[in-house]
Image (tube, rainbow, N blue to C red; front, side):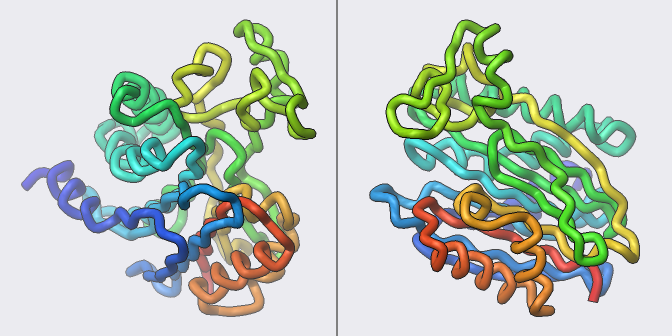
Length: 283
């Protein structure tokens, strides 16, 4: 069985669908790296629209930690599609092992094109994404579109690795594409008065005014890095990066840490779905 077939077989174990509330945990063969996740439905009057990936797999004699939060809007079809296809599209690229950033960018573009081509089946909705690939426990590659976020703890200090793609900060790009940014209705800046993020997968009706290319960064995992947090904006709307790191570092169990973060966001009256993955990179 070739490496891609091995990966596809393993990948079938990765996916865990959205639900009103779910959690879980796992660990790397590179002790003592562990992860935990918690997904909690928000107070908004719609079904849960968040999906996640959290898993370690072996590919080409390497161990890869694959982690993602997909935060859907106008339905869960697009985040469900991302959950099944985005990482496999990234790892189909042979150049992933030599040019990971290029492979990630190409896979994001190819996946968005596939979503748009399947729009009659997937609907008019879309999704943000934040993804993390941990290679052999020592190298992180982070990519994102939208406002789900990746935050790293270095000696207890929060470092935001992703970039929030908000309409006001990318107004120029939106207007250059013929769109506009409006705070009406409501008090949140939205693309064409509809979408509160400036980059997303899907959203065929707005795609000519949106971007879906990710921001990509890498980071070394060393003795100074202890925790990585991936979470949807349901957490970040009510909690600062440093507050999240402080809460996550209080317990060595990453699943409990993820649950504590989600519970605290709910206590702070977050209305959105709350999805969180905590990766503990050292004991």
